[in-house]
Amino acid sequence: MGFYSTVMDEITWYTGLSPTAFFTIAAMMLVVYKTISGMFVSPEDYNKPPVISGRTSSRFDNTEPQREPVQLGEITEQELRQYNGSDPAKPLLIAIKGQIYDVSSGRNFYGPGGAYAMFTGKECSRALALLSFKPDDINGNLEGLDESELAILEDWEYKFIEKYPKVGQLVPGQRPLQNEHNEQVQNNLNLDEAKEEPK
Image (cartoon, rainbow, N blue to C red; front, side, top):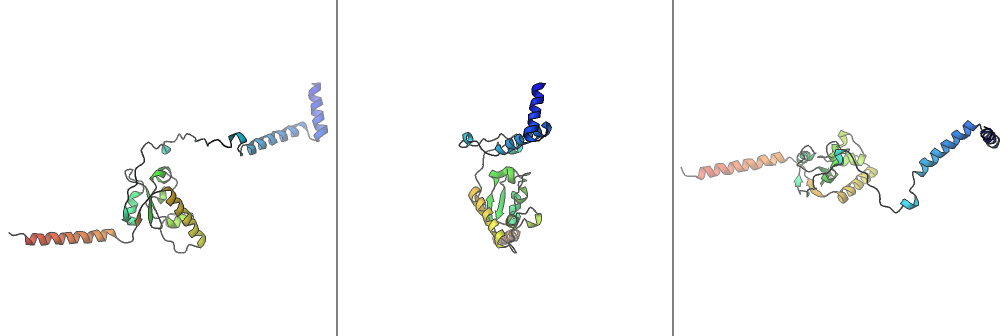
């Protein structure tokens, strides 16, 4: 008991603090030191490759092999909506500034339940420029954007160009009307052939 009381008296005399305050402050300093030193890499670990953690969520399991991107050519926004992830047999597509990219390799981000799933199957230039998740902003209208927002969009575009294959481009207009016109032409040809056949 004599040693304990001597140490406590020395702490009080030397620091001017009660032993309880001294040990509380010492413990807090130790916690702060451990927290801050944990933010930095030790010299021994500096040149080691990063450790990839095993993910337990089935959402990140990619058991299916990567498919070759299908070149679609020119499609309308209405046709692009078919590639929103609702059909697992179809690729995931996103359009930026009219260019369509296959983002199927990022299925955990762009697939159903992913953080950016609301962009899939749509032209999303305005939302990317504004860094917005609002449904009203998910379109290709660039009117009213300032220089900084257009620069942000350009950065997004470069990221997509580097990471995902371009598979087509959006075209304005109504394809259904064009298809109806083609069907009408085909019907007229069939009528003409029927007239030419002898009875």
